[in-house]
Length: 383
Figure 1 (tube, helix red, strand yellow):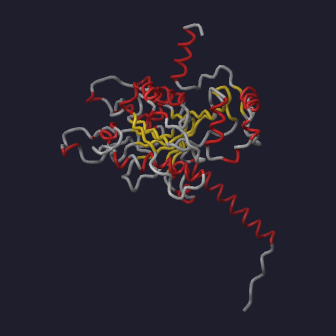
Figure 2 (cartoon, helix red, strand yellow):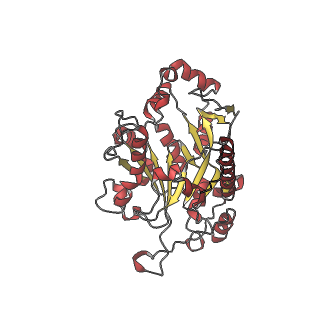
Figure 3 (cartoon, rainbow, N blue to C red):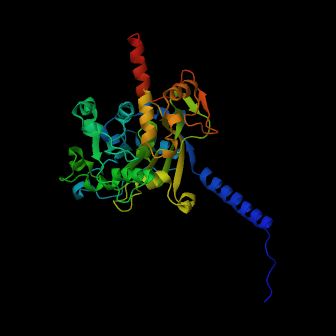
């Protein structure tokens, strides 16, 4: 038998390098075809909402023409629910496409206030997930079970489905495994009960809460807030199965903008039934490499705000460090009060990570409308 010449180590490295370059180029080409931006015109779409009779208005408040124009910007068709009409009555309009906003709550009551106020007019149900342990398995209180705290959000009670995580994930011994279990519980433990009399939360038991095929599901951390215009886009259009609602990335406050690409979260998908719907953790992680490369997806840039480690107190920052899944950062030097105050004041990275640069933004106007209104309210009072 005559064997071909052996490949030396250098040609092998060359072939591997060429493969990686070609794969990267293919990925960039695939990704570039799905990249879209939430521009200023779309951000202002809410000011163009048409107030006419229900018969001439699209289900999300836009006329049919405006809906077509909006979805056309992204080469998406206008969403049309294909399922059976309510009670088999083909003369009645199909159920309105709902939007479910699923997120975890740890200690961030300020961010809960901002999120609920910013998205209240755009989301049908806020699925708020709380656990009695952190990702690092430390015991923690569940805030919304406190009657005093719950009462502070009374304006939103009719839209809140508050879920207390059941169980600990079996073999979830690692922080990221516990995070996955808690994040997924917002779907796996909630959606099978929606619209059923036995549901634990009163809002979940209402027939109107039952998910319909095609309903929008947004998955995020509490400090990743989709722009209202983004939610309008999702409700209106037939979008791919996976959508990255990439965020303008701020750190410590809206005063420090991360230098680099948009943050890769939140994510959106649509309801396909209990078994077929992409689960929250899988959706957030992008799925398998092949699915991420070739599966139907889209990237919407400037579609959200992300304000990471934006806390009012040093104690809240320290609580985050000991609670979140990145246990490698739970070190004394990062927990030090003087260190935290210094990096927040100067815009340096909390964990001394190389390449993490934050640019100071003076009088930033790219903030949720609720914060702008709140600032105006304080100025009017002379504060």
